[in-house]
Image (cartoon, rainbow over all chains, first blue to last red; front, side, top):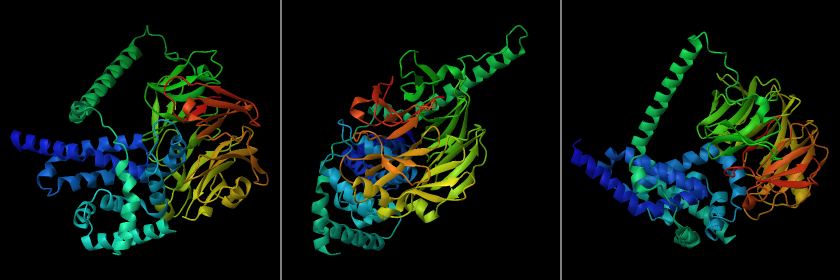
Length: 165
Length: 350
């Protein structure tokens, strides 16, 4: 790869990251409900995207690609340390500074946490909070758009039932 | 998709758009992360090489006296509490009669000392380590990432820990771990499965936390013999709910054995709402479950003083960044402030 092409890709990834940074951060907080962990994961997402910037040339939607990396990091983190973080992190949330996720966002995350699996939670948050459509979600999860829509429909119905209860 | 469901969900999720932004490191630093990692690796390699050369030179020299605990003896940490400091793992005297000592300059969260105080079990982001407590900085990685609890066997030769939904045993020299008890793959993947894994001080019984389903009653604390047999429930969700009045999903997990192995401290905390939690004390046969000490105790972790007269807790009131020490009945409390950054992981040296 030429120096200028490399520079272009670096610039493209950095620009996309900068444009989506706040949204990525919110998504990660909603997934792991721990600001310190979300900061680490945001950093990891940036480093992973930076290291894989060669792929950015062939990625049609760099924004969705970044959310895909962030989602992968969040799910991996939840799998790794679910119990520990739930047990210890929940107690840490009671610190005065700063809250893991301020109310009413914390209340919303509580319900998402209880009703949906981490995988479904990520899809619902990306679809209805960050406005990624089912085609973009299909691209970042490796599933078909039809499967994503079906999955979202079920998750949505479950969530709606819980909200209206 | 029902548009009504979709509208309901959209409206419900709207507060997630208001989460304050999280921050990254400065952009210049981010850009340099790969280079910094490479430079750090080179620096570590060079340092290791220099250390090896120095060690060999010292070993060959006939005039060099034999090494005598370059940074002290395990007894230097006797009675101290090990915590995660800003520059490694440190031990401090809760009575502040002795200055803090550095056990290792590497970062980590201390979990447990061996009975003779020579080794310390430490969890890091990349795994579980047994490190020498004498300050010589020997360390052995005994398990991969994904565990947050564990203890030494009474002879100090092995470590019991929970990971991947199962309870494992591994020699302190590392090598393959053997499974003592395992939950189903489904339970381990979907729920925490079996976690914890604290050996009683008398070395006969392992307590572990069991979360194998989505129903609240699937959370419970169990005991088993050290060979994984004779598994029996110790504290059930129903018992905790009846004693505390808590409803809904609870986090129920074992905190610490009493020094004489006769009882256990456990905690129950509602998972979804409210700041409440309850510390309970249960007899080893499960017949006597009661609240422990004052009702405002709400710890993240606990450890018994190896001498047998006190418990220490972190997370009681994290705003104060203190470790609270109580008598075994929980009636008399004292707060001590650990040096360095506050973190809930700690352990008490014999």
